[in-house]
Image 1 (tube, rainbow, N blue to C red):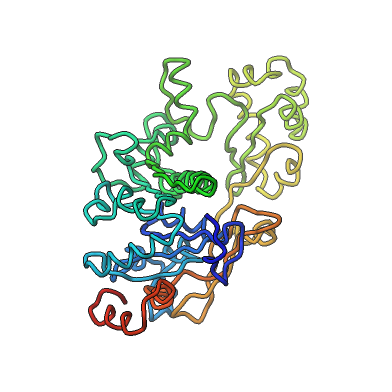
Image 2: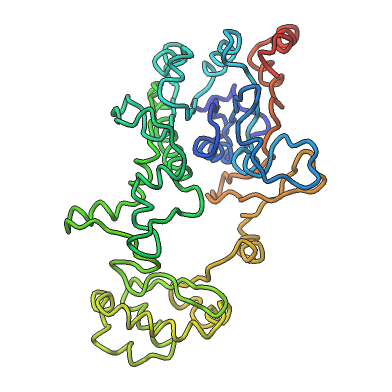
Length: 413
């Protein structure tokens, strides 16, 4: 897997030397490959001549006259190199084959059958690269792992959130299923695909044999909603949206403040005692009717009313001065409050990068996985379309006149 001869000179991190051919677009696939790139993998993003569709999705900086890409693309494609290739041509497919033959991993999120129609199925690719790890993320998975009746259905975040069970337990009441704000129907599958790829790459390093890694977006969301499975199995009752409460724990959820909301989560009886005393309700702290979690769930309206009597007349900051560090507590932040909080600055979670076409740098979310000896990093901005085409083809053995002809033929940009 990690071969010194293929190390990219500008790459550092725990995955330095791992070469990834990235055929993904939109969110789930690019989020996965970006995590690999953050930790040192050399990720070659192979795009159509028109580019990843999210390049035209904003927001854009006001002074950006270039508009090669906006915030969406910048946020999930950093640390990658871009090559633009027309895979509808035989020459384009030959370029891709050569890149994959020298790669450790290929990742795609096309609908099932697309790579087969291009003559680039996993079974074909592994003939010349037996150690290849082939990762795929699709709405309903790949038939190799189990042929879903929905295998040809296209899917986005809202589809996997809906069918994976997440929306069905989210919302203000049992009659109002609600979409989760961020695209977790994409990013959760991306995380699981990343884990699968690393597991398979680890095995390939020892055995020389790759494998197919298949993640269905709906499966990944269901796995993250694990509670709904055992609740039905154990009780025979399907859970429904519970608003900002928890069906099994109390107090555990959101509470109104004078200027918004705060979260308080007392999953143990010891935390409950500390909370009750902190809000001036020592009577509840020592009342046997509230001594256990089961008792508090049974009397949750009284518990919530007691806590909100304290929180609703105070600001989030004032509540934090009382509860912070004593019980699990956090204010519900707006994005502006996240930008102002020192935590995210010292943790390097708001990272400034160049935005081509704009005189002003922009900020994107940083690397959340912190390694002490080989830390990941945001080393460079997202690539412009085809920015590294010549560099990549030269490294793959193409001569200058061959590259020029491919460009003249509109096989590459």
